[in-house]
Image (tube, rainbow, N blue to C red; front, side, top):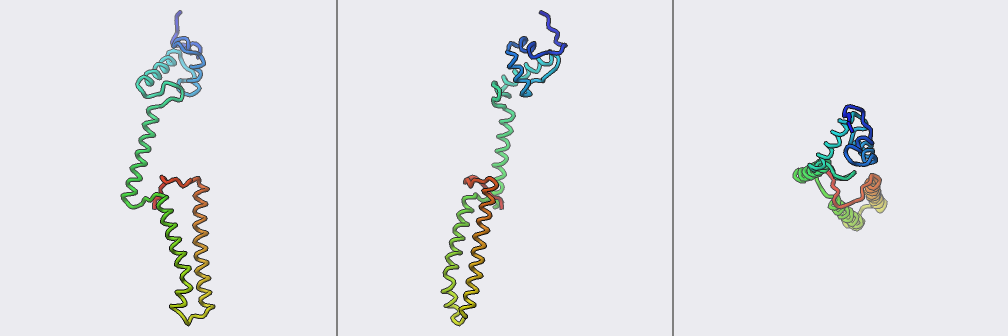
Length: 174
């Protein structure tokens, strides 16, 4: 049987030459791993090149297998991100979300406790202060405390809406 490698090749002809099924060739072409059309010689060359890449470890043997080039790119990206975080730590621009949450909770609790002590402290420091003035001061402080709580709740809601799940490995850059 003579094969004209300069003729336009079909999936079936290529499959017969390389010893695989036509469905296998069709799948490779459909996934863009082989050219969909071309001269039979070019298709055989592309198929052999793919086998060489697999043998050299640059491509996975199965459809959807590991692609060494993509894996190296993913590793390089992760290494770059790690270096960016280390640099941010060195510049003092990095903090884990869990640490920030603890600091915010402690600060909020401390401020609330101090606000609760204010009426007694005002009575001691300013015994002549009229009750109406003291009530006005306490009302203003209560409004500020409530706004603090609302703002914090909005920030948390925004983070949740943005898809953040609060995992400990998240970071915030200042």
